[in-house]
Image (cartoon, rainbow, N blue to C red; front, side, top):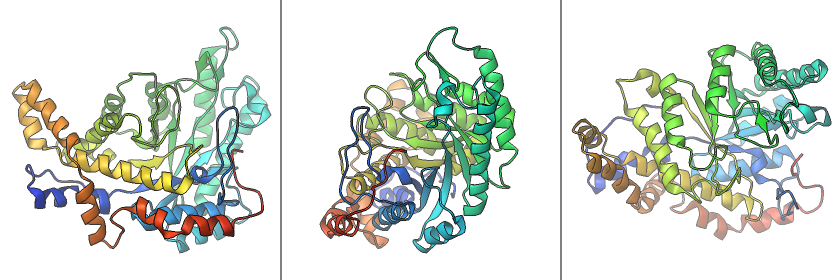
Length: 406
């Protein structure tokens, strides 16, 4: 991504120029599993038109990109998206104007992983988990993916269940072994989570643990921040700032939460928190005095990781893309020179007002104007709803087995 230069407080014309990156430079990765049947612990709710194969998932991701113009990558989940011929899948993705982003490993669904995967006390299970991640490395090489992402459900439910220190040592050893199989140019993303499915201890429970492991295994390992994986009230934007300063912020799994890991649409519950996160990213992009953070901010991957349980899948994904665009655009409107001056003068109220004022700006008309100028619908969400494609998709996909969890 190109570095965003700081500019003065914009006029209306300059505002359009300033936020243009949200339409022309921002790139969002769409998860293949965001289009499938999902639900709660109590029920999965089927919907018409849900994809039945990974190829149909790619078609849906391509539709989101066609309407928004900024979602040009699709993230795969293995084994949910496993195929016999990855060269064929790679070609299919490219023909639809997309690229394959991350390859997400799954070491949490098999019965063998009841007591963990890389941290399991059984060396045979740990070897199986390493093999699964190595397999994802091979798929990354075959598909041209840029990353292998690891999220572990590893942990314990009760005090004394296992040795916490030795679980950490197993984690580092196993991930280090898998890291050695990364194809050239491919990165490893390590995601963390406060709790769940383990209820007492989680082996990669926070950003510090993830950062520590990444530093241990190698330079191409970076932290993935899932915005729903924190305790209530945690200052996520400060975590983002610190990871940028360390040059280890690799990617986001973007969603929103009210209570736990709710996987709601990004920006749907606390849009100001999303804005504060976006501000830290845009601020680092503009900071030529901090080349480590600037490079890191310009390389970070934005992926939507959401469970559309009761809302229609494609419209929800398009709306999520638009939510992120609007938030990034507001962050781009922050007058960085005025903010720095207020900070240097110790003017607390003025510094805060620089952020609050940008957040209060309605950027939707400006974004609509930019979209039209670049051959896109002014309102991608409405355009899709009015296109009739949802009805056509439901008819075309009647029969067969719809994809879902697992």
